[in-house]
Image 1 (tube, rainbow, N blue to C red):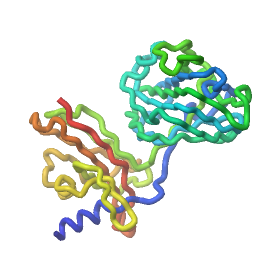
Image 2: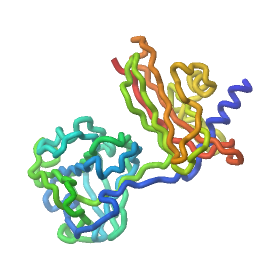
Image 3: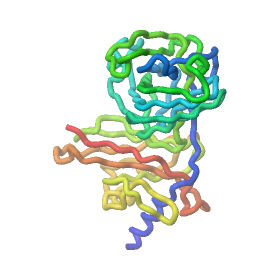
Image 4: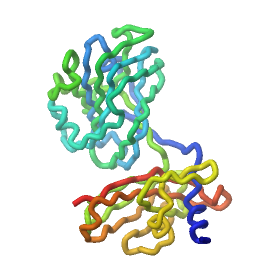
Length: 327
């Protein structure tokens, strides 16, 4: 019982008000003027992709939680059906076929109505329902599409959106009736793509590798403000939540969590305890047993950093990274 209580305390200190970082495309932000694509509902349906080259993404894994654009005019945008999707992409130049630019699509904002108040010369944010785990290596496609758009406080000609110079940063789009579901774009254009800000929490855990029996999943840990501090990783079969006072841990308090925190299976859960580098990075591994019974098991992992004097001696805690073991 004492070990259980200590493990709860060890994993309980979810930091309030976690800081966040930003990826600006381009970086630094560089406005070349205004463009009313794609938030110009006078054309009817829209399907619009930003294809951002890896060279503009900063080279580090990031859990993207917010996407922001900067309009030139203050206006409220509405649509009866609005969807945002993201995907890694390895093409050197995007295709005119939308699906080719979304080889592994993740719907980060499900299709539904939207009311979006946009203020001139201000980063105006869309919160992702499902965060996107950028791998730090590939290019990124962001797709926005909508139907039934309208504007309040402005007209289509004045609802202008800041755009970027030509930086090999593509926009792929269709406008007009039927564009929402169109498989093929009307234009693939390296000019005038929207400036965008991608926001991620500073304390993140992102996985890579093959989640299959006999393979290894590597967990990349990042907490730039906690360089040199000790860390503890935990893995659970669920996401809880586990309330501790006014705070919440998004791992379930199950046997697997206690096993990983207490270090009972070091041949499977490797480097679950250690020190972050001076820049606040670290890594851990899950060596999945080579047994078909593992297929279908879903694992959830998070890490925290430790510092004496903080509540529960916990400085920060990451998001929860989840994956399912496959055949």
